[in-house]
Length: 537
Image 1: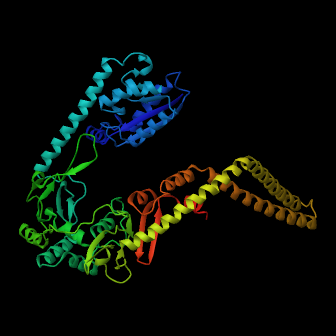
Image 2 (image 1 turned 90 degrees about the horizontal axis):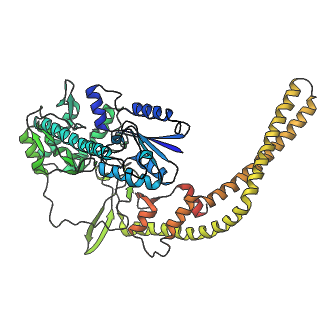
Image 3 (image 1 turned 30 degrees about the vertical axis):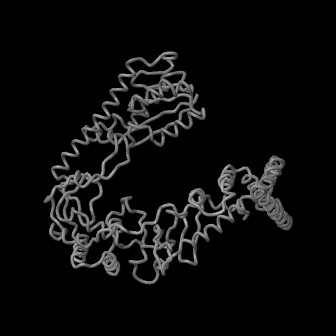
């Protein structure tokens, strides 16, 4: 029997441990040691193979946790026959779903379940339920989790109403007060840039012109500024070196109400307990407290700057999200998504992709400023897809023949490869012996040199044979490789296609990189090795 040792620690547990100085009460190491002691003290468990699964920072109110899902996957494959946890709450706090696992799923799969602190072992309840005490404990755990969530939310809301900043990332231009982490102060270096942006907006300058001005002056974007100031932080660590100001980044900054001294919070909220997904909160329901820190601009200046924003026209042309390459086209230079725009020239509709980054760049070495017409790009991609479809058909026939040959020759090749390796090892050993005898004076120099030449020549011959055989074995492996079969099966689904559509693109293509209208690169959803096998390269 293989034992699955499951351990979980949520963020709430970590916060409680810090608050009450209980560094080991629920910790990963404490749970690990407790379960291991239990295993060691039971004769029927201590000699079993143990596999450990732990989720650090995941709530017990739902079962969408990576290690828990890996545990279930191995259980379904029949690889694990027993699951042990510290207590029921580590496994899950949703008593209804937990009851399903205890009463239905685990018994059906023949899995033994042990909760150490609860004194529960499913082997003691074969043919019966776990008893009222188990049900009551699960209900208590579920209620505790929901009650704790309400209390935490209430405490946070009270801090928000007092104007205490409890957000994570601080807006560009502001800093946490070193003396009080719930207060904000002005960051002089970044605030000067914020002030300049507002001055430009108040003077009536367009967003795109403000962005160009900032780039011409070489001002760092908020992301790159944060990187420089906090090189040890992971946030923004993947920001491109080509990152620069654009109309969207300027717009976001100008709409930041915290710049006139207010604290704006509760902009998003979770859709339920245990859910990571959140939704935007209407403006009237957000918590806004004014006059809580020094402002970079006055409220009057902030309101005056808002006049730069034009109201969106009701007749704005919107490209439907049904075109084949939706969300797949990227700028080959900066990596940003290239949105599609539509227009009318001499009464004819046309659509094109463009890099918004290029419009605000300075100099000639940046992203292409040329548009890429949709119909032209579709033709380029469709030609490549047709080539892949055709190659996949040929590959299936080619690999089918190789499969038959491989099954006949595989065993013989493996034995031959092993024999050659032994011969090479023997040859190397003779080379060392030959040298040792010469150094010891028991072998004539001419005899030594002749034998060394012969052994070197033989070793090169064996290396060549091994190399050729290794290539053939790799070909056999690629024929039998599940990844290759999966690629062929995926591509084969579209063998009868007559035009490019979203389903084909989603299944086959990761992204389409456009460097300029003459240079386009397609990144497939499959590895280069698999593509070479399919294309016959």
